[in-house]
Amino acid sequence: MIVLGLTGGIGMGKSTVAKMFATHGIPCFNADDAVHQLQAPGGRAVPALASAFPGTVRNGVLDRGRLRALVLGDNAAMRRLEAIMHPLVHQEETKFRTAAFRARRRAVLLDIPLLFEAGADRRVHRVITVSCPRDIQIARVLKRGLPLEQIESIIARQTPDAEKRRRADHIIPTGLSKFEAIRAVRRIVEELRT
Image (cartoon, rainbow, N blue to C red; front, side):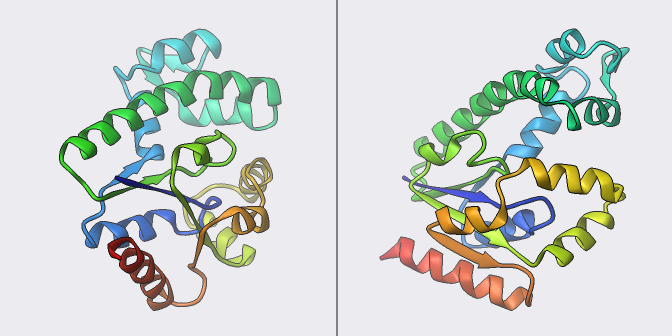
């Protein structure tokens, strides 16, 4: 089974590209979705987060905004958060990969925004980076309602786009037209079939 790792900075279009791969029958594990499930009420991460970040969990519900505010400007707090979340997300990824292997899938896609930062690039056969100009990236994230200061802080913590492109096996441009991205995905899928 070929394991593809999909990465790119916030607002680069990873989710859109993952859906394109899904239309070709390639199942996708979404690390962000796993994080949301782990942090949802009753999620496996909630007790550890409540202990590590007092005041962020009330009545079993994580205040994600409060947690974000605590960790964005604090490297030690971010490392504590990552030490809790990365192993749990990796466990969910392992379950996904095992199920795909048992289903005899030819390929799977791992949508992991922090692919390089978490060392997950060592667990994939090929790295795919989605990339667009920074002004488009910021405009996309502003539409989500995050303030510019938080967006800049998130981008600063991620591996720079230029480095991701340099380390990738494939680059999918997402700032031009959707058809350009569709063509790039189709080329990768055709390579997998040969």
